[in-house]
Length: 225
Image (cartoon, rainbow, N blue to C red; front, side):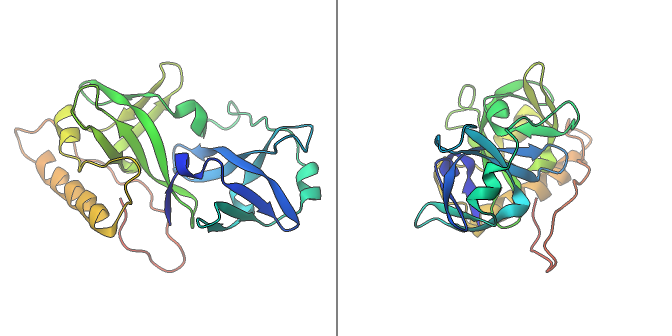
């Protein structure tokens, strides 16, 4: 199930014996693009207003009731340490709240900014990064596959894109809030295939992209970008 992080914000987390708070963000690994856990605002029933809830504790998502089950009790949440993840000791660990709004650095230009993250809530990975390039390209919202991305540069702040300006113009457009259908994902896959063909042309400034590791469930999933 694909859900925008902006949509998940506010979803209540239901422990086995009651609600513990609501989602305000996530942490992720910018090398594998896995979601390491969620940031949960406890609403004041704890002295610590925010806790980190590891992804391995997450259960089923219920969009009808805007809730997410968690495999722990309220008492166990009380025993959590306060939210203070050391990103210096984990160099690929990133906060969604920090990276949202980062400038998008293409191969040959700075093009817009990070607008949202699209999460696969079954495997807890970031399937796409939603970007807004409307400052230079009319109607410029698109979904960017992790394999098209480079480093997250914290000091600038910049998210590197391993595509050129012209290549980004050809990414299928996407409007925020629009469901991500199999047909749309098929268009992204076809774009990725064609982009690899273009990169082999002597006239092209595009370089072929090395594949990023794919995170598959024990049952082989359909091809993903």
